Length: 317
Image 1 (cartoon, rainbow, N blue to C red):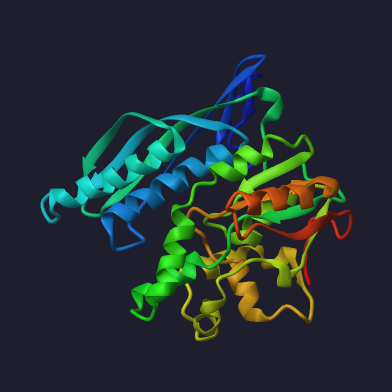
Image 2: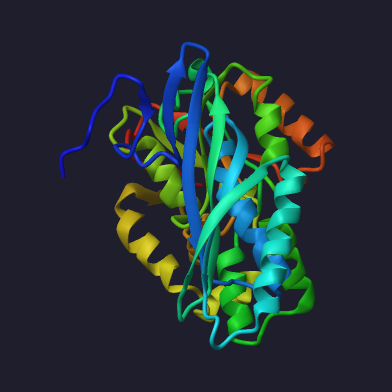
């Protein structure tokens, strides 16, 4: 399909970036993104919070500040109480208030399956846009949230999840990437950034190096994960999206003997409202991680580095 080009388009659909970016003037660009999905938790209010945090995340990943949002609602009005929708919207609105985002409208349709999310507009300086490509040899890789929310949601559907496991997952998914994004703005050596969502850690990492002249080494022992999910992964209680991610991207992955299969599965787990994956100069990485931890981003870790060889490959240690 031929794409429409424009000299003011900084990021479009060509490189699977997290959002679109269009330059309005030399010192201002707008960021646009849209995301919505079906419920992944039972509580309507919590679902609203997670859906909004997930939708806003793409703007943060691009280095921007979300300003306004439009609700996107699909609701089965004939089979579900309207109070459920009220609770979803209340949860979403509270999360928007936390992010200092203004809800300016939206659109709803009757649908047999409930769905909710946002269309979001944000701003960024054209020279400070963060793309998912541009990682440089020697960069350190930082991940800001633990992995495993997709697996936990599958375990929950099987009625095998503990309350503690579910609560940890919900807290992570509902957490905004705002603090991490704000801290990034203090560093000029950030070369690439993306948020880890449906394609899993390795899927989004592959997007960062695909077609480039660099590769990555990821130390599996450094990657933050929900350790409670190991037995469920070994039993095969995993989401279908994990298998699709692994089948598609495994040709780009080289695994060492010290990285167990169950952990590789977690690295392909599709996340909802996952953390940021950041590539930046190693001289700033430790400082950034410490500042993140000091500001309550407790799982932020340096998980690897960008290397010149093998290019286009991710090596798991």
